[in-house]
Image (cartoon, rainbow, N blue to C red; front, side):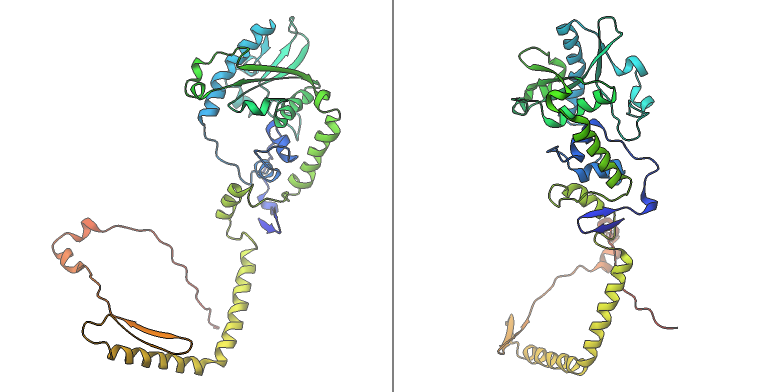
Length: 349
C-alpha cells in the first residue's frame, strides 16, 4: 500500500479476490452526498482495505425490532401484501444470498426490505424501504438524500421507478422498549414517489457517475482523496496497520542512512571540540559538587548563555535481595510488556 499525497494506492497483491458492491447505502457515499460517510470510506469498504466492525446499538436494535411492525402496518394501511426476503430465499436469506439480492450485476448490489405486488401477486409495483429515527427534523420536508438514492437504486436494478420510503419517529422510551412500539399515523410517515420526481436523470447523474467511480478508483486500486478530519477513524486504523503511512519503508531506511552519513561528516569536523566540551563540562560539575555544603540542596554558577546546576537529592530504593530471601519478591513482581527499538551499524566484511 502506497500513500501518495492525499490518497492511497494498492499494490497488485493487495487487491481482494472479489470486490464488495456499490449498495444502496454506499451509492450516496461514493458520490459525496452522504453526510455520515465519505467516498474514501466507501472505497475502503468496497476494496476490503478497511471496514469498521459492526456493533449493534440501541438504534440498530430498535430498527430491526420495529421494521416487521412497519411492514404489517403498511399491509393493513394499503390493503396489500408485501413480499419479504424470506418468502424468496427462506429464513436464512442473508447467508444464502451473501447479502446481495442482485447477483447478476457486477457493480451494484444490496438488499431491499420489501417488494410490493398487485393484489393478484403478479405485477411488481414498488420497492419499500423502512427506516427508524429520532431525528424527525431530517424528514421535515423531503426524505434524506441518501435514503432516496438507496431505494431508487434498488428499484432501478429491478427495472422499475416506483419507490416507497417509510419512517417511524422514535422517542427515547421507544429506543429502550422497541417491542412496545406500535406504528400509527402519529409516529410514522409513508412517502410514495417515482424516481423521476427527485431524480429526472437518475441513470446519467447517479448510475453513470457511480460506474465512473468504480472504474477510476475500485478497478485501479487508487482511492479518492481522503480528508484528515472526516476520515480520521479510518486513517487511524490504516496507519496503525501500515508501517509506512507516508512512504515505503525502503525509502525511509535510505533517508535515515543518508542523514546519518551527513551528520557523521559534520561530527568528524568538530570531534576535538566535542571532546574538550565534555571535559570542561565535567570539571564544572566537579567544582559545583565540591562546593556543596552540608544541608545544601543545590549549587550553581552562571555564564552569559548557560547556567550550570548541581542538585543534591536522596532516592529511596527497595532491597530486592532481602525481599527475595524473605520469599516476598515473587508476590509483588509484575510483568510489563515493552518493545525495544535498536539501530545496529553494519560493518564491512
